[in-house]
Length: 350
Image (cartoon, rainbow, N blue to C red):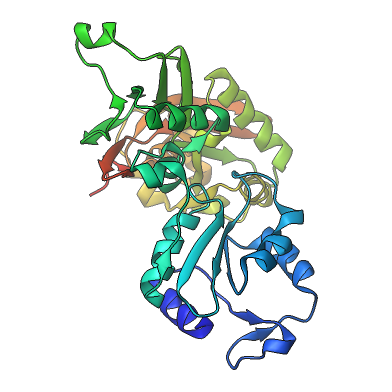
């Protein structure tokens, strides 16, 4: 059963998937766990997105219990009984994707998924699952729970967004357009945006990763110098780090240790572009004859920010500090509700 799961999941998913067995349950094609189950579990909690135990629920619960932190950090954990009849998501049902994975595993095995989260049982919109699917950062998990509770009790929850909203809103989600609707605005609601707003008395802020940072720099600049300028610009515009999608620069700087160290530390994408690509970016930029003489491009940071945002809006022009230049752009995006979920994508991509 374990080998079958691995084979199918490897064929369907891009993630690295491995199979393991305890020494007393040796199975061909699986790796032997050389330590205790508890020590092995501890190591997996630091490196894995999901764990699937095959065996008794009690054994799995005792194995993971010492390492549980929060729904925001814990990997998805599932248990499958030895006969392959039931699949039970134990923790991180929504944010970690355990419920979704349980349904996938149950289809592979012809088993029954035992999902116990209230929103799933009642067919309600789950804001935490929706946020996870669309890479929206949840700023307040207590408010997320309040929203689920309100929907479960038949109350309306508001929604506002600085992107384009498409599709049919889930039951219970309210979005007022005219004056009449505004007068009946709920006290509790959701704001999706890269800058904080408070459209409701109690507002859950979900942050889309749509801000791109363009960087130009002298050779050998440190991570600290880069961080100082980026932090300054984000603070000035009141943009959280969670809204930053990636850093863009010129190919000439793609091996700069300071840039690579910053993106690794902050877990951001790093992209670099050729001179011809940057010069082909349309828009009005702060040109520099000196920069063009050195790099072949009249402005690196502004052009890189716009290119990385797929033609988005430049919201911060070139700013310089200690050998680093920085510019910010925002990528247009849309949210489309499909059943209980949605998709987040760029408006400018084709």
